[in-house]
Image (cartoon, rainbow, N blue to C red; front, side, top):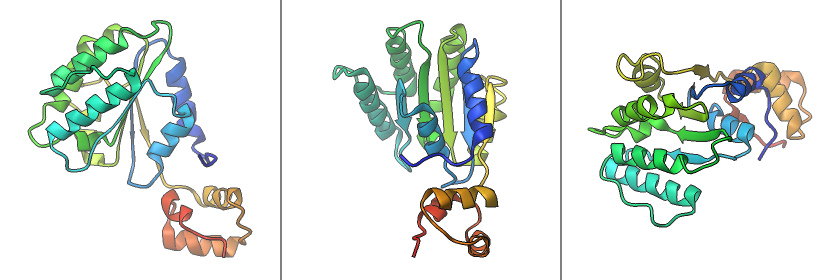
Length: 218
């Protein structure tokens, strides 16, 4: 994995959440290709207790199948049952997490969360119940919800008027690279461009890290 450039403020916030004495519900959002997943993976060095990625435009039955596969992979248990709804899925996740080391913080990473909430899905209601009935009673859970659909992240999580109202403990909006961070990124990849060249690229590409990753030295 490439070296992380910038994101010091965001990493400090994640560090404070890791060191807190309560369970944490962290919402990380920002436009596509801005580096949200890379930030989380690099900060935690891929050491998750559970990691699940939503599938784009997939029906609930497919999302639940993928959730089951993630549980099999992280729990090293092929006997995970099939789920007919998200309530069952989160109930199983809670029962499995209860069997882990009670002295260790459990890192749960839900990536592309807006995609999980398929049409007529009970995902948000199940997530609310999971947090309020189980996680809120504990102090060892670190749940990261990541997504690019800002309106969904705001409406369903940050400004949720129902079961998740005021449950979000930290919100992190990931912004594009600054011009200085773009220069630092190029230097990390061995580019020897002068600042005039870098400014020209910045005017064309903005500060989206993914676009800068496509550049070649030549």
